[in-house]
Amino acid sequence: MRTKTGTTLIRAATLLTLAIAPAAAADQPMRWLNVHVQEADEGANVKIHLPMTTVLAVMRAIDVDGFEAGRVKLEVDDADIDWPVLLAAVKDAPDGEFVTATTDDATVNIRKDGGTLRIDVTNAGDDHAEVRVILPSSLIDAFTVDADNTFDIAALVEGLADLPDGDLVQVDADDATVRIWIE
Image 1 (cartoon, rainbow, N blue to C red):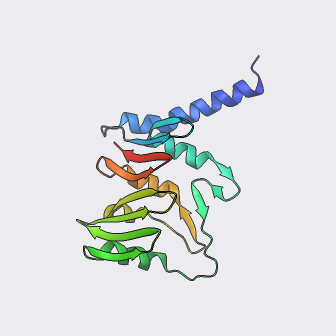
Image 2: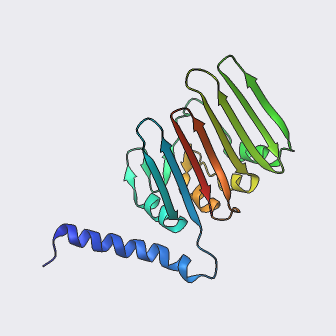
Image 3: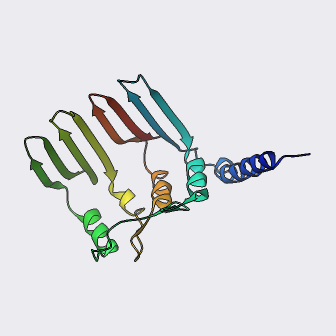
């Protein structure tokens, strides 16, 4: 006799297998999302290496307050944003340096180089940190925000699967390092 927990695990494993099977059966290579976090103070070292299909299946299966089926509500209720126009403007902008802001504590640089949007933030204060975000223009097509300001993160993850291998986010701080990349 199966327990309720055992039945739930079997169902979850079946759903996971069904989610992965179509991608594995295709002639396309399996794409992977990687996250590596090293924390200096605690000595923690976390490595995540998951097939994109698994990430998508899990995201779409989660339904908690503020995050339903891979979608999250953005808190911009006081702003009227035409998301398609905004995203098209960013995607179609020519290469160049868009923003450089410098204070005693930090420097922010936003530029487009070779069709790739690059955001670099350097915090020079007590909490020294460098953050680099790399967003190829093709990924901007995967940003989907509806009229209710709900951001479809699952659609963005699907877009990651079409990118070439490489880094997306790097954080180097005194107390930790983080790297997110796809392969």
